[in-house]
Image 1: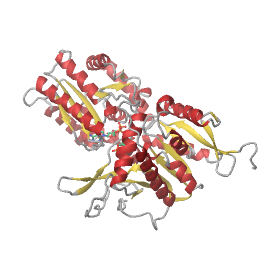
Image 2 (image 1 turned 90 degrees about the vertical axis):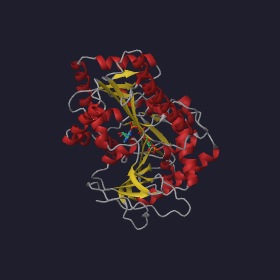
Image 3 (image 1 turned 135 degrees about the horizontal axis):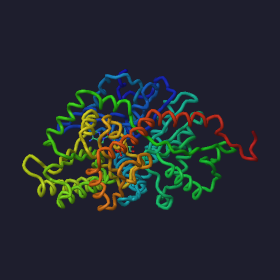
Image 4 (image 1 turned 30 degrees about the vertical axis):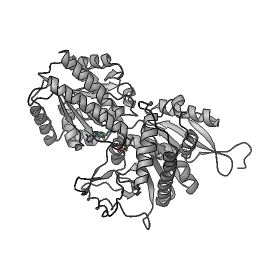
Length: 499
Ligand code: ADP
Ligand code: G6P
C-alpha cells in the first residue's frame, strides 16, 4: 500500500490500534542546491529497525520530515508510492525553523545526545532550548492523542520525546503507553547534571513500560528514579502516584534492538548483490585485505579512532599499504551542530593526510564517501569486507555490526567491535576493543587481519547464530507483548486508597 501524503492532517482519519511517535518519519525531505525537494530514507538506526518491525501491523507513524518551511516555498511534494507491501500510515508533525533550531539541533542534539553518550563532548544547557523541547513534545503528544483509538497502544520513541509519555497520559488516560530509548541511559552521576532531570524522569514515568537496550541502561534509570523521587521501586517496577489516588506501575526493561535479518539474508544471497561485491573489490584493486567502516558522521562513532589506528599500522608497515584498503562510508548528520562540523573536519583531515602520505595515484589508502548508500550497496560492501571496524566511544546498540554479521552468509569476515557499543554484550566473539586505547585497537585490527580462517569462521558462526535468533521482529514483539501483559496488573493500590 502506498504512503499517504505527509501533509495530510490527522483530522478525519480512522484511528489505529498502534501509534508510533518518533521525531523522525521513515522518510526525510531533502533539498538540492536548486531548491528542489525530494524524499529519501531517513538516516539512523531507529528508522532502520522500526520500519521492518511494523510490517503487517495496522499502525500509524507520527513524526517530522526533517524539513521546515521557508518563506515563499511551495508545499512539499507527495512521498512517492512504495513498491512493497508495508501497510502503515505516516503523518507529519510540522516543525517551524525555531523549533528545529531550539528543540532538534539545540536541546536534543546539543544537550541530551552528548550527555547520554558519556559527555564525550560537553553538553550545552540552555533554558530557552528546554522550553522549546517542552513545547515540541506537547505538539507530538497532542498528535498522538488524536491518532490513538480508545484503549489502543502508543509507542513513543527516543530521547527527543521523553516528555511525551506523561503529557499523553494526561490527555488520554485510556491508552497504553510504551517508551523505548534508542541511545544509552547514562550513569546516575552523569544524568543528574541535567538541570531538567526531574521533568525528564517524570515524563518517562508516564509510560507503562520504559525500554532500554541493555540491563545497564535500565538499572541506571531505576537508580535515578530512586535517588530523585524516592518512590517505591522493586523488580523493575516503579510505583508512580496515579492521578486519582493509589499508584500505578511503570515497568522498566531491557530489550536489545536488532536488524531485519531475513531481508539482509535475502539481499546477501541475491546474485546482483554478490556480483556487485566482487566488482567492488575489483574497483578497489583486489586488495589482500579490505577494511570497512559504515556510520552516521557522528563524534560518538569513533571514526577518527579507527582511521588513526589504520594509518599508524600502514606507517609502521604492520599492514602493507600495497595490498590493504580501508573504505569509510559516512552519512552526513546534524550538520548545523558545531560538534558535527568539527568531527567532519577531523575525519577529513585524517583521510587527506593518509592519502597524501600513503596513497598512490588511483590507489588511495582510505576510500571515503560522505553520502548515504542504498541498503543493497551496503550489503555488497559488507560481503566484500574482510574486516568490519565498529569503534564507537559509546553507542546504545549499533546496528551496523549486526547488519555485517547478518550479511555474512558465507561465514567469512571478521568484526572489530567497541566494548562500549550495546551490541558487545551480545557479540562477545568479535575482537572487542577499548576505543580509547589506540594500541589496543591496533592490536585487534592486526589480530583480525592475521587470524586463521577457521578461527574467524568459528567466531562468525557464533555471532550469526545469535543475530539470527534475535532479529528486529523479535525485539518489537517482545516489547509490545510485555507492554500488553502489564496492562492487566498495572494499577498498584496504596494501602489507603479505595479499591
Ligand atoms: P545510529 O542509529 O546511531 O546511526 P546504528 O548503527 O544503530 O547507528 O544504525 C545506523 C543505521 O544507518 C544502519 O541501519 C546503517 O545501515 C545505516 N547507515 C549507516 N551509514 C549509512 C550510509 N552511509 N548509507 C546508508 N545507510 C547507512
Ligand atoms: C540515532 C537516534 C535516532 C535518530 C538517528 C538519526 O539512531 O537514536 O533517534 O533518528 O540517530 O539522527 P537524526 O538526528 O538524523 O534523526
